[in-house]
Image (cartoon, rainbow, N blue to C red):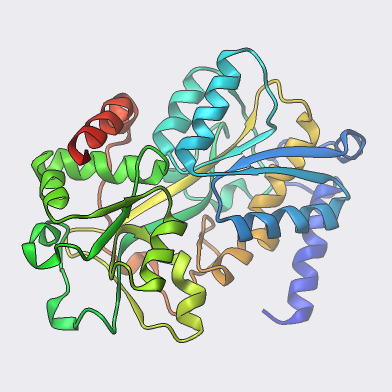
Amino acid sequence: MDKLSRRAFVAGTALTLAGGVRPSFAQAVDMAAAKKEGKVVWYCSVPVATAQKVANMFEKETGIKVELFRSGGSNILRRFQQEADSGKVFVDVLTHSEPAAASAMTKKGLFVPFKAADFDKVPDAVKHPEGFHVAQRLNVMAIYVRDDLLPAADRPKTWTDLINPKYKGKMVMADPSFSSLLVVITGTLARMHGWKYFEGLRKNDIMMVQSNQQVSDMIKRGERIMAVAADAAYVGEGRRQGMKISTLYPEDGTFVIASPSSVVKGSPNPNAAKAFAEFMLGRTVQELFPHEFLYSARTDVPGPQGYPPLTSLKIMPVDYDYIEAESPRIRKRFADVMQ
């Protein structure tokens, strides 16, 4: 995007936040009240460097401070649920990576329905029709490998290929007890192939770490050469700098999982929360994501340069009702199998 176009987008975002012309479906954002509140508390599982950029952009645009708590998706949800159960609400906006949990929490009445000015730019499949949650970005979860340590002829083509003994000691994966993205993937693969599939991965000495960041660190250092059910955004900068890493999109399906974002009911800064939620769906933030090797939630923003468009991938179907109902059992069974 050229500088003139970028200035136009920023100006357009500022106009909307300031109370300019809004689509008929969009709900009001009281910017005077938001600025009086002075801050917004954001719990999120966005990659930490990207999350800080978003926070800085919002502060610069509005003068409203962002108090950021960033951790893995499952950790974010545990903290929020504990606070909600105790009747104390400290967070204004919640962004994580477990669509099933967003649905469950919506049913519990924990969120405020809010439709931002660009709500219609996000596909219906990744948002609640009344705006209780809406995708902030899309996570493409597949397999990535070190080109210099795993020849092309030896690479897996499907998820089930990973239980082949030739991959023993080569793989690393994030833990569903920390990463909510992995709850979706683990539950889906276990339902398709049975828990014997994960028993096969354990026999292949798959290394378990907490987060996608730790997965990428293992790959970069060469301690493991294949990242399983992982987000290649975390190695995007390394690839740009010349590191030989390839992403493999399994023939039986790639996981594309939304990261829902919600305005929390009863939050301490309700107007700043709506202003921030609106800002995150605007082009200023959504066009940042591809530069960070992430996929925007908007249909009018292309994916990262050099990464395939989502329309070119075979996408793994996910039963989110099943994941919602079975999430605690999935986490426990996975922990038991991997011990």
